[in-house]
Image 1 (cartoon, rainbow, N blue to C red):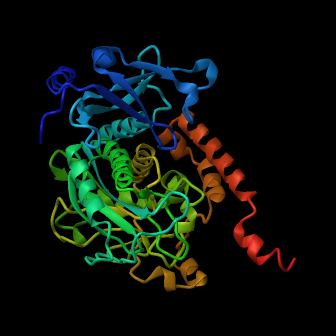
Image 2: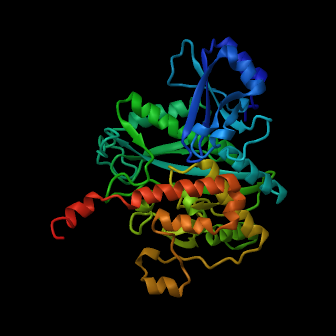
Image 3: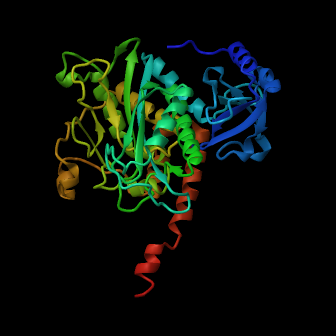
Length: 444
């Protein structure tokens, strides 16, 4: 692994490569990337003191009377932007957001994740490794969800017209320091996946926002539109972000126990139990849009039933069996998040739920090997299997009653996130849809 860049390194690289502009990135509470550019002349000042901006204009940040914010670039995230010109190139750094007195800003999603990682270290762990699988669609435009192909899972035919887009995207991500394992066509028409190699949670959250920007930029250069909308096409599988997770102490995987059945340690069992117990509370953070709940329905490979299994993909959490007995490969896979979430908040919520299970020694439920979609409501009830909320309004109601998520997100993010989600739900639920006009207007 290469050594992390310092401020001095960044200054030297920008001078040697004659970098013209440096883009500074951060996200709002919803996970949307915000950016502004500085010239190389401003770089030293930015690295030492940060750059001021108006926080009241950023969704979920400060009110207008407390609007002064500082974007402090993290030099370890410096990379060249591969889709910009090679002469007079453009650099990029991801920022931490500070208050004018130099303290971390409680509304910064990156800081929320840093606080979760601090709790992890207090619990005796060194690494929270994350391996997310982001799915997305290539469409002809943003105006209408018209797919580019009729391909299916792992297709390698002329149906997969997006091979060049994926190749160029993988190359761009590699230039941005993101390690890619493989890419392929997904189940739905024009649906794709590019898998990143697992990494520490903060680095991976940075990689997720880099991934989303890169996929969209390369698509734009090819004259098409890429979307991470969870369910853009009715009747087809939606796009998920299955998240593989493990906790390590140094080089030792805390989820692995060679003497335990299936190699799953007590730590892993309690971590999984924490995420299952608090799934309803954290789902609005993992699936935060009204459209997210069009994906979370039975029958489209989307998990809605709160249970765990080793092989059963209808369960909320799966313990993969690809390499049984291998310490480093032992992990759990949470299958309900979607790729349109804010990764900093999502990973923080997941980690806090898992740590809660470890610290409070939650009871581990039996695994469910049945296809949960095929059970009746009464059969699931008899097994004690609950379901995720089926709409954003119900999900946010669960979040409002969660002391764990308040602690995980912090009071500022927690209260503003709820307010924003309530507003979104209210705006959505009063809409008169095409379905209503088509099916009700002619008969009522």
